[in-house]
Image (tube, rainbow, N blue to C red; front, side, top):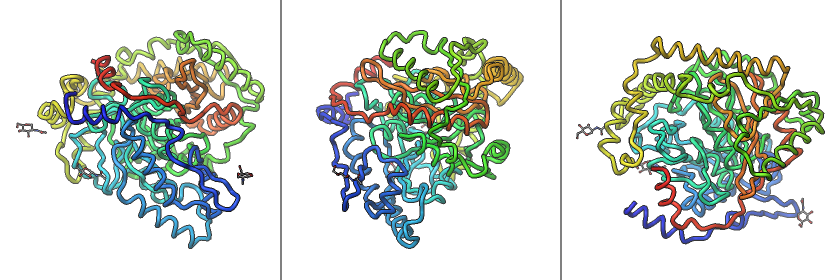
Length: 532
Ligand SMILES: *[C@@H]1O[C@H](CO)[C@@H](O)[C@H](O)[C@H]1NC(C)=O
Ligand SMILES: *[C@@H]1O[C@H](CO)[C@@H](O)[C@H](O)[C@H]1NC(C)=O
Ligand SMILES: *[C@@H]1O[C@H](CO)[C@@H](O)[C@H](O)[C@H]1NC(C)=O
């Protein structure tokens, strides 16, 4: 760390940031008050329609906010040099349509860095190996966002290569962005791999963001940073043009501050994509006519059956604030008219939670090599064309990529694989069997609409079956560290999950913006030490 970066980091570290008080954020234009901080898509659209706010104002606000906070939080890798122009264009379109362009029109969106854009932004998965690469076209979800009129604000940081290079890397770390910070509590794990989207949204550096998940990458950082993370059923959203891990399990979804914002984004990005045809075609049967907004119902808990699974997810929770808060949420479910079935268990959950034992990692490695090689070969230009090249790049650029600290054990193991062989297929069958006898049986036997779990430890259960989940802010521990609850369901049950998650959020309103003032002095060194 004896580098220019370390010196800069120390200089920045001396800054005291007060996240809540950084930028003046209220626009008062003739009686209607609009606050940029915590603004939802609905509020932004109302302010647009009422001529209180332009998309350009909003983009400027977020760019200032990023300039101010990012040196400490490090959740954004690049801002889009064309964002203000795109916003100006959206403002013009709105004036020509007499304000009648709702939805995502004019809304700035931050993309995780593994999501390809054909513009001035780089798409690098946080790695220098992909810096200077050029994608052939926008990712499928980006195409849809642009068509909906969204403004691409920039690329958010992430765990490099989804932390699939080496498990020795701390959550959220990437060579290009360094170690991002949880905005709530100094030194707290921000989780990953969609760390940048979650932190940026939490700290009001953008309204909404897009993340990706294979195993826990949307739900976990959302849980840790007090935002809403929506992991859709695999195939509901296109993965085309996104740096892959494992096409069997990869999914793309929103990370926002509210359930309704996440649902607006979901509505815009779901659907069949010829470039990810089989999966998106299959899952498209789940898309309800009229979209997902209709399920944003404050009475969404009424008549629902919710299964609470505590073990093993809460086994090590001993913070009484957390336990009290979690238990009070069960009362909220009941008061909302839901039937709560408490203390359920998922058969073989201990096996399911061991990704090396189930073969989850084995399958990921085999699929990663094939899928990432294909992604790299399809690039218009790139310094690396295969996983083998990436491995060589890391060796050649050892200091830049912190190879001494983190290595690339997983990459080296993945490079040894040869696609889906017999062992991998057996692992897939084992996991299908575990899902059938575990999660699916739990849902069916108890006639549940959703499973409710504390935190994000549950993610393996949802990962190996391609099931959807929504993480909603559910409180803060006695140190102020956020936690969420995950509502998980069977494939295609997003409508029910939205009803339950939205009604829960409306009844509890647990999210608050990070307001803690703290210094980042020497934080880096400490975390790097503990990580090696
Ligand atoms: C705006 O704020 C003022 C002062 O706090 C308040 O009196 C007024 O009702 C607010 N207007 C709206 C539309 O919320
Ligand atoms: C993309 O990376 C190149 C090479 O480092 C850099 O010059 C350029 O500014 C980056 N693009 C953006 C939008 O930051
Ligand atoms: C790594 O370095 C070797 C030796 O200089 C060179 O031949 C190779 O092209 C480099 N590979 C990458 C991907 O940087």
